Image (cartoon, rainbow, N blue to C red):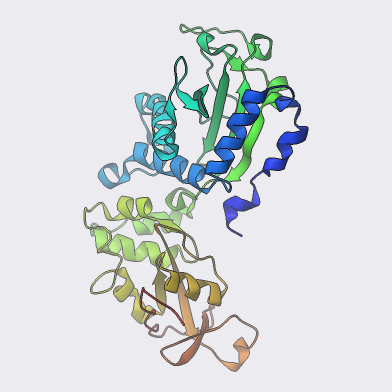
Length: 324
């Protein structure tokens, strides 16, 4: 089971949800979104990519939400709305942002849970409420029929309102506190992160990243941010990239190919998902490793190395097309 699947809410909750009682449109929208994305993987990926789009690490080297300008943070909601519409091909709404299953739905995003700003024109309509927090590595999305009595009074220039805390139980959650794909740079040990960015060479920075962030999913946006080069993918692969540079240290870098995912699974570590890499140091299996997960590569058995295993050249990864 993938991490984001541990937190999804089954669609069966809708039958007994107070939020959906007597609201056929709300049920219809809920079921339609779930049919498009049963696990929440697509939704989570869009939120991860949108945050990374704002950070623009390939150009700026940024990885921390706090380093965004105020105008960029303000733009986040608009980007979430646009990227969700592109991904799920929602139609344009008549009065609201979207038409989902023929029903007008507004979309509101907040980086602060409960901070959704509801415009007066959304009263009576359905709202898709989205929250993601890069520091907590969590996200939620739910649907609410906007009623005036469930909102706090507006005290801003646009007269926008927020949902009262005591009425958040009226939200029908599509996914609640699900796992956001990790921003590895943000959550690294500060000393490790400092070591990654110490070099002026994009290639050396990538090598240090895969050396220090082992057994963690590293997305392409992280690679872009560290390399800050247009040919960033070339910097990961063999033939002079990190994969060949770190092999003498016993480090494998697996991509999202099925053959590489199979290696990770055999070694008992988290396999990379689409667009991700996972690095790990391996060692030849010894008698003391008898209970450790093992894989045969280059005709020998290998295990995940521990601190007592000396560095030795790692085996070649299998071809991208197949794995036996």
